Length: 476
Image (cartoon, rainbow, N blue to C red):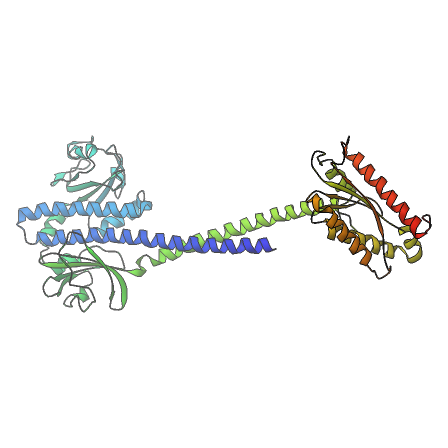
């Protein structure tokens, strides 16, 4: 029972530690993923904002960069949510979210294995001139490419494609846009329009403010346009840097993780509500917690079963080796142990027998006789048990083997004689015990049983002296 309680406490501690570790790991992973997604959005916003100050030709080139960023954004999303890799419907949703017409996933050989348009599955860089444009991607995984408006291989319709390798270098992600969308993009010069059209997940917001005043000129939440960063508790005292700044803010009372980047004209911020991935964390922790509890219950069951079997074996062993009346070792244990003794080592064999047990049984009954037998066993155990083993090998016959500290045997024997002489029972006033002691090194014995015989002989001599001196008829 004690072991089961201890095992249960250890199991609870392990579960708590495991869940805390999981929560910490999930927080770290989610924070990293949120940072990466936010950084992609920031880069895209900055890229799109920069195009407003460029010429049309430069604007087209910047749009290429923008589409590459979109391709990277899709790549990051697929990396973060690998389950969407072969899910056409989810890829179509991501295409809509990223404002692209097509998404294609290529393997390392340049073959389309998945995407938002199933009819293109199986096309490769060898399928035609338009697709062969991207062959350099196969030899240099650091490349990102964006193609000018070109008739596509499948249907000859005019499209613009951008492609990049994913972070692990295991697949290429390509996005495609129609020329009309490209022309529409060229007209999107207002910051408010640019930012409001930015695709974001629920719980994410993008804000663009004037670097000098902090006034919000564009936001995915149009209600925030015209307010200031200070009003939203978003810091503005950040330095220009290529690396975004991360801080914890409260936008209109909602706790958010905020990633901010500043240049000479704008301050761009992406906020992600803390509840954005909290639900997923809770579900994950709950699932792992249930699994650990079930695993612990199974282990507890197995542990209980093993402990029960061990207890039953020990109980059986104890029963088979223990005298039921006295609690001493029995004849079976005696025969097993005596054959393990080494004649070359020092130990002492004691043969003991109660005096007058028959007379006590006949006079006071067997209850009195049993009382005296138990008392004799208790005296032997108290005096010799710490240094050896006590066996009941017959009705009133005992044997003791002292294997430890035989040099202190005289002290043990004196203590035994004293305890026997002082004993008083409920049914019997006193008891006497005759015994004979033999040391294993007294002479060169042939076998262990010769020692036992000599101890018996000395014990019977002691018993004869007792009956002679006491004048008691031994037969009665």
